Length: 193
Image 1: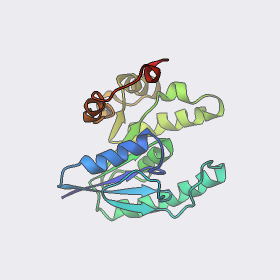
Image 2: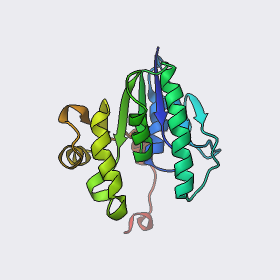
Image 3: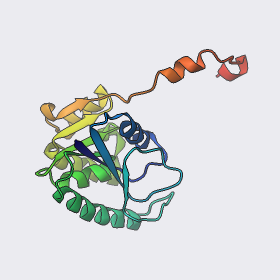
Image 4: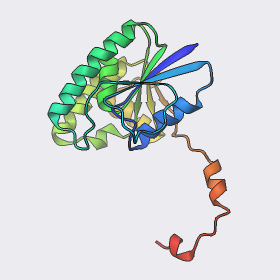
């Protein structure tokens, strides 16, 4: 049986979190998955697998101190989890998780990072340091997954990710939800802009 570890701060909220939830539920029966989180919440998206928590308290606004503590804890836990040789791949989402996934190495398992935004446009000013780190680190991942061709082009042209390591996988969506809603009566007021 193949085993995958997802790394993301939380399973509450946005699109990356929903993607991790969906993937865990849609993988075939011969793939098991765990997720490494800063904290577990009752508001988490559903996850089919084991949740591994860093034991941090959930915070809506995360200070630099919180981020630094989370990074140290995540770094240590990833080292231990990767050394266990239990995982065939570690897939991370968002830059903080991506950077630590790469730094903790890919000798024991595949390192796959997911990039969801055009980094060259996303980070300006002091946050340009994130782009510098991405330029240095992302080429060391086994694969860099972009959510669109535009993001993939940015990674190749502006961040320097080798073409053979970069791939686009569009966000999936359950289209049956559209077909269920097509039978609903929608008032004119609901569709006005």
